[in-house]
Amino acid sequence: MANELKKKYGLLTAICMVVGIVVGSGVFFKAEAILNKTGGNLKIGILAWIIGGVIMIISAYTFSILATKYEKVNGVVDYAEATIGEKYGYVIGWFLSTIYYPTLTMALAWLSARYTLVVFQGDSADPTSGMCFVLTAFYLIGSYALNTLSPIISGKFQVSTTFVKLVPLLLMGVVGTIYGITNENGVLVENFSTVVNQVPASEAIFTAVCATVFAYEGWIIATSINAELKDGKKNLPKALVIGSLIIVAIYVLYYVGLAGSIKNADMMASGQAAARNAFGAVFGKAMGTGIFVFVIVSCLGTLNGLMLGCTRGIYSIASRGRGPAPHIFGYLDKHTNMPGNSSILALLLCAAWLVYFYFANLNGSTAAALKMFAFDPTELPIVTIYPFYIPIFFKMFFDKSLPAFKRFVVPALAIAGSLFMVVAAFVAHKAEIPGYLIIFAVIMALGLGFMKKKKVA
Image (cartoon, rainbow, N blue to C red; front, side, top):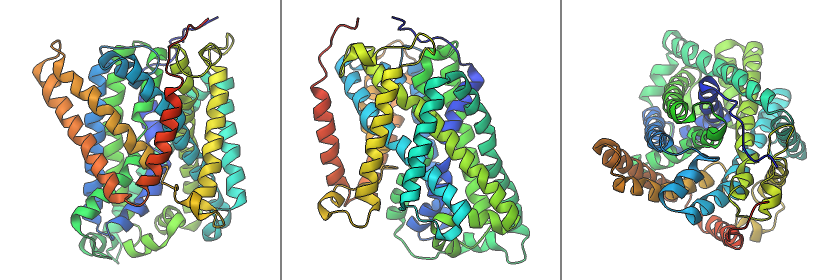
């Protein structure tokens, strides 16, 4: 049985993987949300993007230090094993495989479907409709098929969509900013100088930063290909840091350009059509709709990258002899060099979370008991990974092979960033956290039953 992943990705693909996974629906989806959370305070909104970006860069740089020391199958799990121990690595791997990867992948498929309906149905598009649900399932299956049946084509698709998705961001960032400055109505200046609704500054910052976490998250998933990356110890750190810096610059530029398109009050009232309306205001309705199609492509590119990490989730556990049936889910297809059985289970987990998300969050007729356990899948599962990072960062204090700056300063900043995210989540999701923690505890307790290491044939 073949059980070694081949080296097939270069530095460019890795950078595109980082940028491609992170840049996508998040920035389009969360821009309007951040405006609402800050009461239309553009300055605080920009500050939130910067704070979220700095936390991402620090975290990515910290993991890049670890990436120069360890290289196996699935980055963050390897780092947990190497620094804390195999059992801690398993716990993180179980969380990633059963909650983190599938909820994010499901959410991206839903957002891709949601934006697709906006193009065809406009403001009347219903993100809770059966059509949206079916289209979400279609996108999940399509992304699964692309990643499982042809990983090489999937990699090329990732590279191409990375450049495609930069088109609407850079166009809005540059043209929108110029439009906002030169327009006779002075939209950009007005948006900077006025606030729609007054929100306490501390609350606005914490809730807005928590919203950015979805737009910024995904860089850690790129570490899942470190065993398939040529010269991974050298190229993965470069990809993480370079990709993160590119992302922050693009996001801030886009957000400023967006503020130059239409008034904040109108943007806040546009809901799911906010991004399309902004493009239409700057480029005209027809061209704006055409550019918005690029937004959908960018969402699908992000979905592709997330599915890549998702399909390898259970495999990363099984390859270590842990988890359910490791002899089955640790199998690699000899023709595609892909973990086929793990991929199938990943798709089923995504489907299960989609059904849960639909009935708990979207379906108005759902019983109140289930709604008690409804939570935002684009924020809480992401924030949950940050507390898992803290012991890994803390252990770096004891690594005498590292210079003082990398041994003490970098992990201390990373721990501070992780704690900031936890506080932000509690401020932003007070009502949702109890129900989410119960679901989290049940799934993690189930995983403990499969922790015992078994021999892989």
